[in-house]
Image 1 (cartoon, helix red, strand yellow):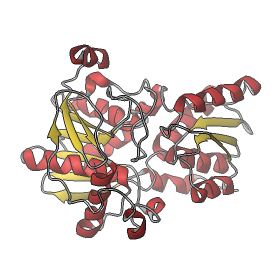
Image 2 (tube, one colour; image 1 turned 90 degrees about the horizontal axis):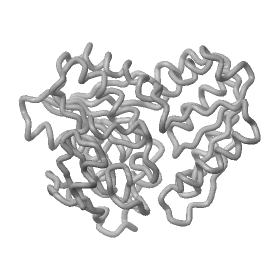
Image 3 (cartoon, helix red, strand yellow; image 1 turned 45 degrees about the vertical axis):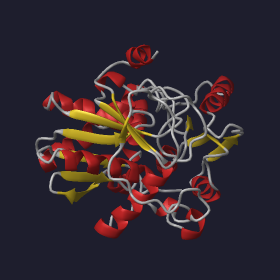
Length: 342
Protein backbone atom coordinates (compact mmCIF):
# COMPACT_ATOMS: atom_id res chain seq x y z
CA UNK A 1 0.00 0.00 0.00
CA UNK A 2 1.18 3.54 -0.74
CA UNK A 3 2.25 4.94 2.61
CA UNK A 4 2.23 8.65 1.84
CA UNK A 5 0.05 10.39 -0.71
CA UNK A 6 1.77 13.77 -0.65
CA UNK A 7 3.84 13.04 -3.75
CA UNK A 8 0.63 12.52 -5.75
CA UNK A 9 0.23 16.30 -5.84
CA UNK A 10 2.90 16.39 -8.55
CA UNK A 11 0.46 14.68 -10.93
CA UNK A 12 -2.17 17.36 -10.38
CA UNK A 13 -0.17 20.32 -11.70
CA UNK A 14 0.03 20.58 -15.49
CA UNK A 15 3.08 21.54 -17.44
CA UNK A 16 2.35 24.30 -19.91
CA UNK A 17 3.41 23.83 -23.53
CA UNK A 18 3.50 26.67 -26.06
CA UNK A 19 2.00 25.39 -29.30
CA UNK A 20 1.73 28.74 -31.13
CA UNK A 21 2.38 32.42 -30.32
CA UNK A 22 -1.16 32.77 -28.95
CA UNK A 23 -1.84 29.14 -27.97
CA UNK A 24 -0.74 27.32 -24.83
CA UNK A 25 -1.76 23.92 -23.53
CA UNK A 26 -2.15 22.68 -19.97
CA UNK A 27 -0.70 19.16 -20.28
CA UNK A 28 -1.52 16.82 -17.41
CA UNK A 29 -0.01 13.53 -16.35
CA UNK A 30 -3.28 12.64 -14.60
CA UNK A 31 -5.71 15.56 -14.53
CA UNK A 32 -8.44 13.68 -12.68
CA UNK A 33 -6.32 13.67 -9.52
CA UNK A 34 -7.29 17.33 -9.14
CA UNK A 35 -11.04 16.71 -8.68
CA UNK A 36 -10.51 13.32 -6.99
CA UNK A 37 -8.40 14.81 -4.22
CA UNK A 38 -10.71 17.82 -3.81
CA UNK A 39 -13.79 15.60 -3.53
CA UNK A 40 -12.21 13.14 -1.09
CA UNK A 41 -10.85 16.01 1.03
CA UNK A 42 -14.33 17.53 1.21
CA UNK A 43 -15.89 14.15 2.05
CA UNK A 44 -13.44 13.66 4.90
CA UNK A 45 -14.03 17.19 6.20
CA UNK A 46 -17.82 16.73 6.22
CA UNK A 47 -17.87 13.19 7.57
CA UNK A 48 -19.21 11.55 4.42
CA UNK A 49 -16.34 9.08 4.60
CA UNK A 50 -14.55 7.87 7.70
CA UNK A 51 -11.23 6.16 8.33
CA UNK A 52 -11.23 2.69 6.76
CA UNK A 53 -14.37 3.47 4.77
CA UNK A 54 -15.34 2.40 1.26
CA UNK A 55 -15.64 4.37 -2.00
CA UNK A 56 -17.61 3.43 -5.11
CA UNK A 57 -17.63 5.23 -8.47
CA UNK A 58 -18.45 4.69 -12.13
CA UNK A 59 -15.52 5.47 -14.41
CA UNK A 60 -14.16 5.00 -17.91
CA UNK A 61 -10.53 5.14 -16.85
CA UNK A 62 -8.57 8.12 -15.58
CA UNK A 63 -10.85 9.20 -12.72
CA UNK A 64 -10.83 5.59 -11.59
CA UNK A 65 -7.02 5.55 -11.59
CA UNK A 66 -6.91 8.82 -9.67
CA UNK A 67 -9.38 7.72 -7.00
CA UNK A 68 -7.59 4.35 -6.74
CA UNK A 69 -4.28 6.08 -6.02
CA UNK A 70 -5.92 8.21 -3.33
CA UNK A 71 -7.79 5.26 -1.82
CA UNK A 72 -4.54 3.30 -1.59
CA UNK A 73 -2.72 6.25 -0.01
CA UNK A 74 -5.44 6.84 2.58
CA UNK A 75 -6.48 3.28 3.35
CA UNK A 76 -9.97 3.20 1.82
CA UNK A 77 -11.66 0.30 0.10
CA UNK A 78 -12.70 0.99 -3.49
CA UNK A 79 -15.09 -0.50 -6.05
CA UNK A 80 -15.00 0.85 -9.60
CA UNK A 81 -17.88 0.14 -11.97
CA UNK A 82 -17.04 0.34 -15.65
CA UNK A 83 -18.12 -1.18 -18.97
CA UNK A 84 -16.49 -4.08 -20.76
CA UNK A 85 -15.89 -1.88 -23.81
CA UNK A 86 -13.95 0.71 -21.80
CA UNK A 87 -11.56 -1.16 -19.56
CA UNK A 88 -8.42 -2.88 -20.84
CA UNK A 89 -6.33 -5.56 -19.20
CA UNK A 90 -3.37 -3.29 -18.46
CA UNK A 91 -5.48 -0.65 -16.71
CA UNK A 92 -7.40 -3.32 -14.80
CA UNK A 93 -4.12 -4.73 -13.50
CA UNK A 94 -2.96 -1.27 -12.39
CA UNK A 95 -6.22 -0.64 -10.56
CA UNK A 96 -6.16 -4.04 -8.88
CA UNK A 97 -2.54 -3.53 -7.83
CA UNK A 98 -3.78 -0.43 -6.01
CA UNK A 99 -6.38 -2.54 -4.21
CA UNK A 100 -9.45 -1.60 -6.23
CA UNK A 101 -12.20 -4.05 -7.12
CA UNK A 102 -13.10 -3.55 -10.79
CA UNK A 103 -16.60 -4.50 -11.97
CA UNK A 104 -16.96 -4.45 -15.77
CA UNK A 105 -20.58 -4.84 -16.85
CA UNK A 106 -21.76 -5.85 -20.30
CA UNK A 107 -21.92 -3.19 -23.01
CA UNK A 108 -23.77 -4.70 -25.99
CA UNK A 109 -24.29 -1.33 -27.73
CA UNK A 110 -20.68 -0.21 -27.31
CA UNK A 111 -21.72 3.20 -25.99
CA UNK A 112 -20.30 2.76 -22.48
CA UNK A 113 -23.61 1.63 -20.95
CA UNK A 114 -23.58 4.42 -18.42
CA UNK A 115 -27.20 3.78 -17.35
CA UNK A 116 -26.33 0.15 -16.60
CA UNK A 117 -23.24 1.16 -14.68
CA UNK A 118 -25.22 3.61 -12.56
CA UNK A 119 -27.86 0.96 -11.89
CA UNK A 120 -25.18 -1.43 -10.64
CA UNK A 121 -23.64 1.33 -8.53
CA UNK A 122 -27.00 2.02 -6.91
CA UNK A 123 -27.28 -1.69 -6.08
CA UNK A 124 -23.93 -1.52 -4.30
CA UNK A 125 -25.07 1.54 -2.34
CA UNK A 126 -28.27 -0.24 -1.31
CA UNK A 127 -26.19 -3.12 0.08
CA UNK A 128 -23.56 -0.85 1.68
CA UNK A 129 -25.31 2.42 2.58
CA UNK A 130 -22.25 3.90 4.34
CA UNK A 131 -20.23 3.78 1.12
CA UNK A 132 -19.02 7.15 -0.22
CA UNK A 133 -19.94 7.92 -3.84
CA UNK A 134 -18.03 10.98 -5.20
CA UNK A 135 -20.65 11.50 -7.96
CA UNK A 136 -18.17 12.93 -10.44
CA UNK A 137 -20.92 13.45 -13.02
CA UNK A 138 -23.25 15.56 -10.92
CA UNK A 139 -21.44 16.85 -7.82
CA UNK A 140 -20.55 20.56 -8.05
CA UNK A 141 -17.35 19.66 -6.19
CA UNK A 142 -16.05 18.30 -9.50
CA UNK A 143 -16.32 21.75 -11.09
CA UNK A 144 -15.10 23.61 -8.00
CA UNK A 145 -11.89 21.57 -7.96
CA UNK A 146 -10.75 23.32 -11.13
CA UNK A 147 -10.40 26.66 -9.38
CA UNK A 148 -6.80 25.58 -8.93
CA UNK A 149 -6.32 25.16 -12.69
CA UNK A 150 -7.88 28.56 -13.37
CA UNK A 151 -5.53 30.11 -10.83
CA UNK A 152 -2.48 28.46 -12.44
CA UNK A 153 -3.55 29.63 -15.89
CA UNK A 154 -4.01 33.26 -14.83
CA UNK A 155 -0.75 33.33 -12.88
CA UNK A 156 1.09 31.91 -15.89
CA UNK A 157 -0.49 33.85 -18.76
CA UNK A 158 -2.61 36.69 -17.44
CA UNK A 159 -5.63 37.46 -19.55
CA UNK A 160 -7.24 34.54 -21.42
CA UNK A 161 -9.62 35.08 -24.34
CA UNK A 162 -10.56 31.50 -25.21
CA UNK A 163 -10.66 28.20 -23.31
CA UNK A 164 -10.86 24.93 -25.27
CA UNK A 165 -11.48 21.59 -23.64
CA UNK A 166 -13.10 18.20 -24.08
CA UNK A 167 -16.33 17.37 -22.27
CA UNK A 168 -17.10 14.10 -20.49
CA UNK A 169 -18.43 14.91 -17.04
CA UNK A 170 -18.25 18.67 -17.71
CA UNK A 171 -16.06 19.26 -14.67
CA UNK A 172 -12.82 20.49 -16.22
CA UNK A 173 -14.21 22.75 -18.97
CA UNK A 174 -17.19 24.18 -17.11
CA UNK A 175 -15.30 24.40 -13.82
CA UNK A 176 -12.20 26.13 -15.22
CA UNK A 177 -14.33 28.23 -17.55
CA UNK A 178 -16.61 29.36 -14.74
CA UNK A 179 -13.73 30.69 -12.68
CA UNK A 180 -12.02 32.32 -15.67
CA UNK A 181 -15.22 33.98 -16.83
CA UNK A 182 -15.54 35.68 -13.44
CA UNK A 183 -12.33 37.50 -14.35
CA UNK A 184 -12.85 37.75 -18.11
CA UNK A 185 -16.60 38.00 -18.89
CA UNK A 186 -16.01 37.91 -22.66
CA UNK A 187 -14.08 34.62 -22.46
CA UNK A 188 -15.09 32.23 -25.23
CA UNK A 189 -15.58 28.65 -24.08
CA UNK A 190 -15.26 26.01 -26.80
CA UNK A 191 -16.47 22.49 -26.04
CA UNK A 192 -15.00 19.44 -27.79
CA UNK A 193 -17.20 16.35 -28.00
CA UNK A 194 -17.26 13.32 -30.27
CA UNK A 195 -19.86 11.81 -32.59
CA UNK A 196 -22.70 9.76 -31.07
CA UNK A 197 -22.29 11.38 -27.67
CA UNK A 198 -25.50 12.59 -26.04
CA UNK A 199 -23.94 15.66 -24.39
CA UNK A 200 -24.86 18.23 -27.03
CA UNK A 201 -27.90 16.73 -28.66
CA UNK A 202 -26.61 13.94 -30.87
CA UNK A 203 -28.29 10.53 -30.67
CA UNK A 204 -26.26 8.17 -28.51
CA UNK A 205 -24.37 5.33 -30.15
CA UNK A 206 -21.08 3.43 -30.35
CA UNK A 207 -18.15 5.83 -29.90
CA UNK A 208 -14.69 5.00 -31.16
CA UNK A 209 -12.99 7.99 -29.51
CA UNK A 210 -12.99 7.47 -25.75
CA UNK A 211 -12.20 9.76 -22.83
CA UNK A 212 -14.78 12.34 -23.85
CA UNK A 213 -18.47 12.26 -24.65
CA UNK A 214 -21.09 10.37 -22.67
CA UNK A 215 -24.20 8.24 -22.93
CA UNK A 216 -25.91 10.08 -20.06
CA UNK A 217 -26.18 13.81 -19.39
CA UNK A 218 -24.20 14.92 -16.32
CA UNK A 219 -25.39 17.91 -14.31
CA UNK A 220 -21.86 19.33 -14.47
CA UNK A 221 -22.28 20.07 -18.18
CA UNK A 222 -23.36 23.73 -18.18
CA UNK A 223 -24.64 24.22 -21.70
CA UNK A 224 -25.41 27.90 -21.26
CA UNK A 225 -21.71 28.60 -20.73
CA UNK A 226 -20.67 27.20 -24.13
CA UNK A 227 -20.04 29.41 -27.18
CA UNK A 228 -19.41 26.69 -29.74
CA UNK A 229 -19.26 22.90 -29.93
CA UNK A 230 -16.91 20.81 -32.07
CA UNK A 231 -17.52 17.12 -32.67
CA UNK A 232 -14.21 15.41 -33.50
CA UNK A 233 -14.00 11.89 -34.87
CA UNK A 234 -11.42 9.39 -33.69
CA UNK A 235 -9.13 9.58 -36.72
CA UNK A 236 -8.58 13.37 -36.71
CA UNK A 237 -7.89 13.14 -32.97
CA UNK A 238 -5.33 10.38 -33.52
CA UNK A 239 -3.65 12.31 -36.33
CA UNK A 240 -3.37 15.45 -34.21
CA UNK A 241 -1.95 13.49 -31.26
CA UNK A 242 0.78 12.20 -33.61
CA UNK A 243 1.53 15.71 -34.84
CA UNK A 244 1.79 17.05 -31.28
CA UNK A 245 4.42 14.41 -30.52
CA UNK A 246 6.38 14.97 -33.72
CA UNK A 247 6.40 18.77 -33.72
CA UNK A 248 6.29 19.69 -30.02
CA UNK A 249 7.48 16.58 -28.17
CA UNK A 250 4.12 16.54 -26.37
CA UNK A 251 3.14 12.87 -25.90
CA UNK A 252 -0.58 12.97 -25.18
CA UNK A 253 -3.61 10.76 -25.71
CA UNK A 254 -6.35 11.10 -28.33
CA UNK A 255 -8.62 13.18 -26.08
CA UNK A 256 -5.84 15.74 -25.88
CA UNK A 257 -5.38 15.41 -29.63
CA UNK A 258 -9.02 16.39 -30.16
CA UNK A 259 -8.65 19.43 -27.90
CA UNK A 260 -5.43 20.47 -29.66
CA UNK A 261 -7.02 20.15 -33.09
CA UNK A 262 -9.82 22.56 -32.19
CA UNK A 263 -7.62 24.95 -30.20
CA UNK A 264 -5.09 25.20 -33.02
CA UNK A 265 -7.85 26.07 -35.50
CA UNK A 266 -9.29 28.72 -33.18
CA UNK A 267 -5.89 30.27 -32.49
CA UNK A 268 -5.02 30.47 -36.19
CA UNK A 269 -8.31 32.16 -36.98
CA UNK A 270 -8.11 34.52 -33.99
CA UNK A 271 -4.44 35.55 -33.83
CA UNK A 272 -5.06 38.27 -31.24
CA UNK A 273 -6.87 35.92 -28.85
CA UNK A 274 -4.88 34.34 -26.02
CA UNK A 275 -6.05 30.71 -26.13
CA UNK A 276 -5.54 27.87 -23.67
CA UNK A 277 -6.32 24.19 -24.29
CA UNK A 278 -6.86 21.60 -21.56
CA UNK A 279 -5.07 18.32 -22.34
CA UNK A 280 -6.02 15.72 -19.73
CA UNK A 281 -4.31 12.50 -20.79
CA UNK A 282 -0.79 11.31 -21.62
CA UNK A 283 -0.17 8.89 -24.47
CA UNK A 284 1.28 5.93 -22.55
CA UNK A 285 -2.07 4.21 -22.08
CA UNK A 286 -2.54 4.29 -25.87
CA UNK A 287 0.85 2.87 -26.91
CA UNK A 288 -0.75 -0.35 -28.23
CA UNK A 289 -3.47 1.44 -30.18
CA UNK A 290 -3.21 5.11 -31.16
CA UNK A 291 0.60 4.94 -31.35
CA UNK A 292 0.72 1.47 -32.90
CA UNK A 293 1.01 1.50 -36.71
CA UNK A 294 -0.22 -2.08 -37.08
CA UNK A 295 -3.38 -1.35 -35.09
CA UNK A 296 -4.01 1.90 -36.99
CA UNK A 297 -3.66 0.08 -40.31
CA UNK A 298 -6.77 -1.96 -39.46
CA UNK A 299 -8.96 1.18 -39.30
CA UNK A 300 -11.11 2.29 -42.24
CA UNK A 301 -9.95 5.73 -43.37
CA UNK A 302 -6.42 5.52 -41.98
CA UNK A 303 -4.00 7.08 -42.73
CA UNK A 304 -5.84 10.39 -42.59
CA UNK A 305 -4.47 13.72 -43.75
CA UNK A 306 -4.73 16.08 -40.78
CA UNK A 307 -7.74 18.37 -41.38
CA UNK A 308 -7.09 22.10 -41.00
CA UNK A 309 -10.64 23.25 -40.36
CA UNK A 310 -14.03 21.88 -39.34
CA UNK A 311 -17.18 21.67 -41.39
CA UNK A 312 -19.70 24.16 -40.01
CA UNK A 313 -23.14 22.62 -39.51
CA UNK A 314 -26.55 24.09 -38.70
CA UNK A 315 -28.23 20.78 -37.91
CA UNK A 316 -26.88 18.55 -35.14
CA UNK A 317 -26.20 15.06 -36.47
CA UNK A 318 -23.60 12.28 -36.09
CA UNK A 319 -20.90 11.83 -38.70
CA UNK A 320 -18.12 9.44 -39.69
CA UNK A 321 -15.01 8.88 -37.58
CA UNK A 322 -13.04 10.88 -40.16
CA UNK A 323 -15.20 13.97 -39.64
CA UNK A 324 -14.77 17.16 -37.63
CA UNK A 325 -17.83 19.40 -37.37
CA UNK A 326 -18.57 22.71 -35.66
CA UNK A 327 -21.83 24.19 -34.36
CA UNK A 328 -22.48 27.69 -32.98
CA UNK A 329 -24.01 27.07 -29.55
CA UNK A 330 -24.17 30.72 -28.42
CA UNK A 331 -24.52 30.11 -24.67
CA UNK A 332 -27.96 28.51 -24.95
CA UNK A 333 -29.51 25.76 -22.89
CA UNK A 334 -29.73 22.29 -24.37
CA UNK A 335 -33.52 22.55 -24.40
CA UNK A 336 -33.35 25.81 -26.34
CA UNK A 337 -30.99 24.41 -28.97
CA UNK A 338 -33.02 21.23 -29.43
CA UNK A 339 -36.22 23.25 -29.72
CA UNK A 340 -34.65 25.32 -32.50
CA UNK A 341 -33.53 22.11 -34.22
CA UNK A 342 -37.05 20.67 -34.32
